[in-house]
Image (cartoon, rainbow, N blue to C red; front, side, top):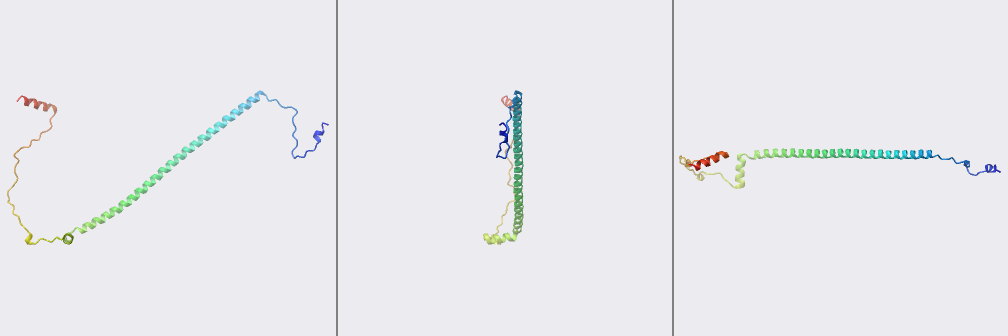
Amino acid sequence: MARSNYTRYQYETSPRKLEPYYTPRIKQTDNKKEESKKAQYAKKQKEAKKLKRKAMIYLAIAFTIIFGISYRNAQIDENFDKVQNLKSELSAVEKENAQLEVAIESSLNLTNLEQQARSMLGMQKLTNKQTEYVSLPKTDYIEAASEQVVIEEEKGLLETIGDYLSQLFK
């Protein structure tokens, strides 16, 4: 009857698993080895996590540095553009200034001044009747100063004390 178990037909596709007649004993040393292997595995995982953290920190630092450099370059480019714009404005203003100077110099001749005085201010040239002559005597009206101005130079402390004492004994 013992063979009847093995001769029975199974409908499944996988064969029946045979259970061993004995269960192997796990030795104490194997347990310790497994625990030490687990501890080593845990240490390796921690080290791997630390390495991943370090890599992420280094990547973040590198990204920050690259971002800072690109931001600085962008600022430099903006300032360069501002300088170029200001230079072009300066050249335009200098050109306009030179043109205005030429225009002013051309308008400052005697005939233009006379025409502007006549037309804008209503001025006319003097006639002989409007001219008055003044005669001045040839004597000199400058008088010599009656008082003499004495300029005192700065004296040291000892000199001022000496002068004070000499005035006391006079």
